[in-house]
Image 1 (cartoon, rainbow, N blue to C red):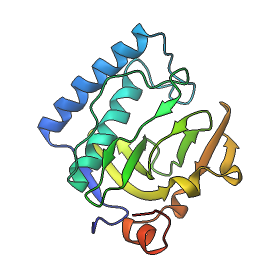
Image 2 (cartoon, rainbow, N blue to C red):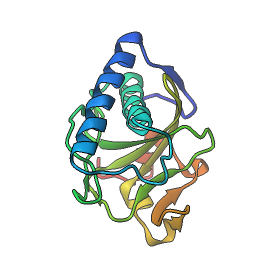
Image 3 (cartoon, one colour):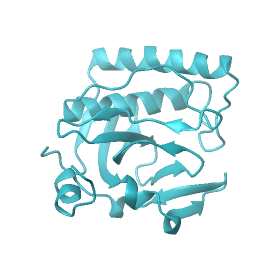
Image 4 (tube, rainbow, N blue to C red):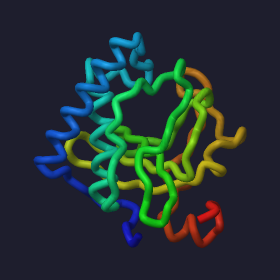
Length: 175
């Protein structure tokens, strides 16, 4: 996996349409199940789902993996945040996306995390930038808990993120 931090990707037309379709289904499913958008998003109807879904699909386009296109409700009530894709080396990845170019890798502390790595994508539909990885063990640490105005959250700055080779060479993951 020779993808470098800072690599830019634009979704293909086909993947843009896929992002729109899956995001709409997730948005409708979330509203049916009473899941409200968190304060953090404050982006308007369906925009958070579109950016999140498109960021996942962009990552998968970049890394040549298949995205998890499932529609189940991903909420605090559900409590589980499963991985979004699996790399060829077998490591699972939970992909986080933000429109802020200097945005941080964040995940709520109340989630039951079930992956090996987190990845951060920044940008706005359909253009994204891969910002790097952090292992679950590194991010899910009491020293990374902060509050960005909407409750306790695990937070990592982009400078702390690594490429896959660095993660594997430092032994941060079992694979």
